[in-house]
Image 1 (cartoon, each protein chain N blue to C red):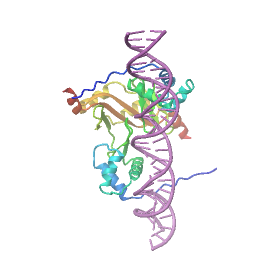
Image 2 (cartoon, rainbow over the protein chains, first blue to last red):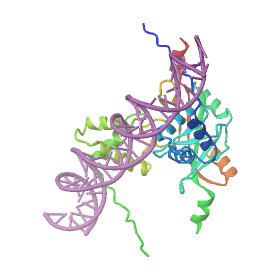
Image 3 (tube, rainbow over the protein chains, first blue to last red):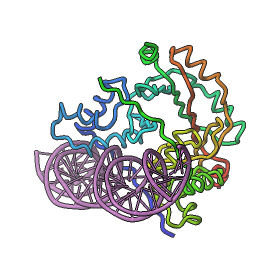
Image 4 (tube, each protein chain N blue to C red):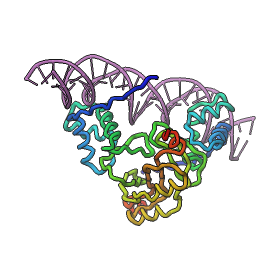
Length: 138
Length: 138
DNA sequence: CTCTTTTTGATAATGACTATCATTATTATG
DNA sequence: CATAATAATGATAGTCATTATCAAAAAGAG
């Protein structure tokens, strides 16, 4: 029998990682990796896009950042890590944070019904935001 | 001023479309396009993968089919179109249907808070399914 | 049947993301 | 500090799910 012991990898602090996190935390939008890349390049012009992806993946893995995948082909990232939900406008595509139900009530409800151990959920609302609603009324 | 009137396109019924829908409806799992492609090929060996993607997209656009995008790189499809939620096991990756809250209660709650017009939501639970729970206990 | 429009199959293209790898930066340790 | 060990970087090639293209075929209308 072969036992593979995965040594816990020491994470090193780098300028790039710091700036990536700072750029992401500087907005309350839900930017893509490319948007973050552009922001980081203003401070570190020679940064590689791969470095941005690598760090975002690492940060998301450690829970310091949230990776969001909605319908489209791109991943969105978010610096805010406290529990909350999202709303996406079907008209303009904008992503909003929504402080909806974040308690364990839903979890418990489903856990009881299914017998599964629920750790968390992702809840995304779709519809028309106020601004688009007004524009569409014209 | 140039006005572009998009003529409503007449949809034609084809053998391929019929089989694709039948294959998808034949399972209560949440297959990928490739899985459906394999199923369709048993009946129509010369079908093209592009045809499967095209039809799934069209069917999803008409609401006859549901396209589900969870974390991974692949789209999953589902023939069941009545409202329900999903649970994904973090251990085995299996996708389960969950008849959780499907009423407008959540929608109303969020609509009141935000002022947005909410049409629907997507709710996905994560955790450990019963089978994995038992296996992990050993 | 004949005309028009949509769909198909085959395949090339797209595009987001990841792997690779030589080099550099960071941290641990003597 | 010096040096060794290891992780991160930048540049770029590769992957892979999905989409676009386009000539040929099929479906529906009249």
